Length: 277
Image (cartoon, rainbow, N blue to C red):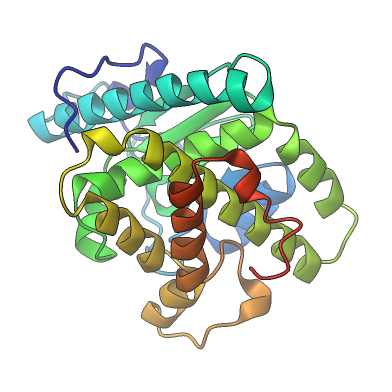
């Protein structure tokens, strides 16, 4: 992805120099509790990653790799602001109010609960902020097999897509519904929500097509496949259990991203009325 000359977003809150927080990362059960409070994880990799205790909070120096990751994130975030800033007036009929993206290292807190790198990037509608441990980019490439800069850009765009859903009032409606249905139905609603975010990420990707290098689109599609619920459960040595899925299968995630990319239209991303997910 060609980001040289692309403006950096100013909507970055950098917490990385604070070091590890006071609590260990939340996994399985903890994540489900936070989801019930309105936490929307972009990528749940807890089946693959183990919890690790964090050292007391300290001021830390950032490595050159961390600095590059932060600059990359800031520029990608800048593209989302430009894209949705143009799409909202034309397709929604009102201005777009962009989110703040929080960069953290190890563990951080949010109104939606504490989170660690093991939970993956996430969006919290309570404060309208996306949260990202840039170390996840290495996890994405080395452990999950989703290599390339556009794979990382897709992750950022996916979390911003949750903010787009929040701006459209979709997150609130889904969360209200999730509170009054059983776990299986709540998971099914969350799958539709996540697939819609993948589709909206594709809408963004179409708008930045001029910045893409050969192979970039396949990097994003591969990333979507690598973080499908079925693939992650299989990699963790488990038989896929569809009733536990919260993000969609590899095929669904890549297909809905492609749908958004091909259309460039928010209306094509209505996963809640789609007969086929």
